[in-house]
Length: 189
Image (tube, rainbow, N blue to C red; front, side, top):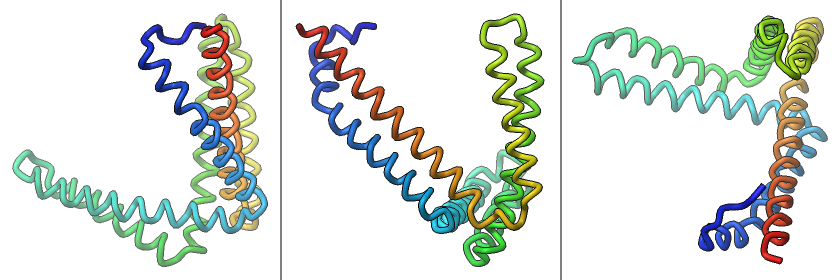
């Protein structure tokens, strides 16, 4: 693989790859912290979701008023109000929000796995279709495991999944940045 031939882009990459590597390491460390303290990570994720719903609800209501002449004003307003109320309920009832989000997460993972499994059989002659199938089956199993242990697993499931995702994201960012740095060094010699 070759890096772009523009000297400005190569120099920009060279200057910022150290930051990208540091960012990857920091994200991975946050993932380890989330795994070490899954309850805190679960509560933090629930708060973030709650505030995203609050902000999204307010923005949807503002949008409904700004576009009221284009139609569907009441529907847009209702969706905004529902989002706002859901966010307020998540933020003000954190433990109940954790229970609800864990149940929704289990359902979502199960459904995603079922859809991915169906997709795998549609892709069957393609190379690596088995990996798509494996991912779908594992998602179905994970969804069932989350359901079967709910509500007892609610305090830690979201935190563990967030921690794992952060670790993988941090590792790929750091590894990709290090390989890009190596590529730049190899091409300059």
